[in-house]
Amino acid sequence: MGQSRGALSFVDVTKTYRPGDEHVRAVEHCSFDVPPGEIFMIAGPSGCGKTTLLNAVAGFQGIDAGTIRLDGQILCGPDRQALPGPDRVVVFQEGALFPWKTILENVAFGPIVQNRLSRRDALEKARALMADAGLGGHEHDYPATVSSGVQRRAEIVRALMNDPTVLLLDEPYRALDRITKSLMHESLLEIHARSGVTILFITHDLEEAVFLGHRVAVMTARPGRHKQTIVIDLPHPRDYSIVTTPRFRELLQEVSDAVREEAVRAFAQGDAEGGLAVVR
Amino acid sequence: MSDSLQIRLVGWRVRLPRPRIDRARRRALVSFALLLLIWELGSTSASWLGTPLPVLGRIPSPTAVGTVWLHLLGQADYWGSWYQSCLRVLLGFTAALLVGVPFGLWLATNRLAHGICFPVFEMLRPIPPLAWVPAAIIFWPTQELSIASVIFLGAFYTIVTNVLGGARAIDARLIQSAQSLGASRWTVFRRIVFPAVLPSIFVGMEVGIGITWEVVVAAEMISGGGSGGASGGLGFFIWNSYVGGSYPQIIVGMLSIGIAGYLSSSAIRWAAPRVMRWR
Image (cartoon, rainbow over all chains, first blue to last red; front, side):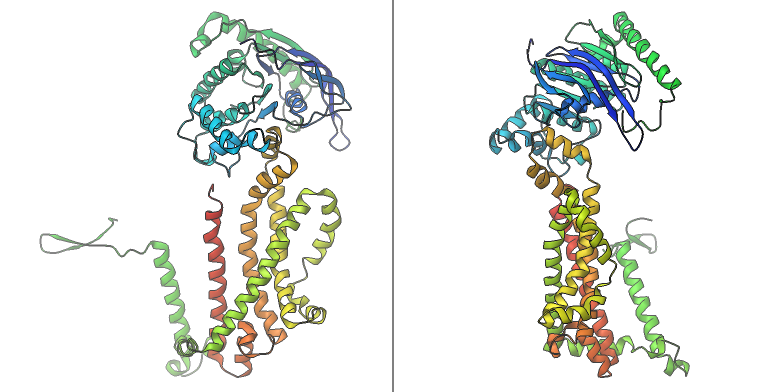
């Protein structure tokens, strides 16, 4: 699509958490670039600071050192936390649709509260986007009454309503079964092909990483650093038949080896489980 | 079991429609009938047993209570007592709601306010509303205000505690999502925090209105319920019956309060799913 918005650059990003007297260095001197318009996957062992990076971009948390730039502009640094905003919308792992609003009202929420569109125009645009994403017919359902697949798609459409520069996805499909997940993947690729939005996608699922990503960045065990970025040179548009091709298997192997190496290190440090829920 | 009663007649069946009362209702009816039966037998034990049973033998029988009640239904004073107590409950409860919900939300969203107000709130909360009655009578210029203020306290603490709990349980991701979608602080408060706390508000209301009925009756008894007569409310009605030695009338007053309390919490339970359509 050649969209030139949404280039993210992380330079020397460092973040330490201080729960009580402990110091937990979640991320240290982490540097990498996210090219605009791509789906950029971040994988790594638990506790490697993936969500820390995403929260900093989203504006939910600050960083202690280094800088993050968005399209050349400084987004956050040690003395400057980004404010959350509709140019960098987050889609969470579990449903964060507002339970008291219908799917349509949820999707239309952004432009209405920003006063960017009138209520009528927002609802109209929401209907159109929902129809594109195959959500027609669910307009007046409440989130609790629809399947988790519909919820996930609705949440992504809700984010896209704001024409974001970057879409931040934090393991959005984690809780889905395999089949639903594969459908969500194809739907996301379709949405991406249409919108060309830059997507920063955190995942534990390496097959998901290789199937969706233009690139997969692997983080080291804690403190999280950028280990390597693997370019996924599979052709686009992709469909699920690609997962059986030798090239897909090769790339999956490469990503798995890199992540596994770090997971083993994390395990040796005793960081594998326990106490990491906060710092994931 | 089939869903209709079947009676075998010679060679063929007649299907009788099952009575349209569900199981829960049938059981409730049975329990009420049993209660009345035991009560009746107990309170008339002197005549059929020769000696009154302890406790039960001293209570007026359901038939005596029913007779008195039927008579009272035609009396303006009885309905006046209902009206007075309902009015007091409504006023005190509405005031508690109007003050308690914003106060609870304020404590939940403002760390400074929480730090300053919460300790005092927690210290005053265990004081039973009834312990406030003498002080309230001294503080307030009119009897009516004294009673209303005590009723207010009865519901206030419950509502605030529930709002606080509800606000604390809000999923942080809902707030972050809203911020991420460009919502201002006020929008987050109005469109996320408030609806998220609404279920807890309803729980607080349901519990609170029950407490309100407990309080109104006691407050009316202690304060003499204004100038007596119908303006005394149901609490004074009971006290007056006791003083006047009309024991069946005491029971009528008690049951009236039970009914009033049940009706008011039913109203809240009825309203809840209609206000919170998403649940």
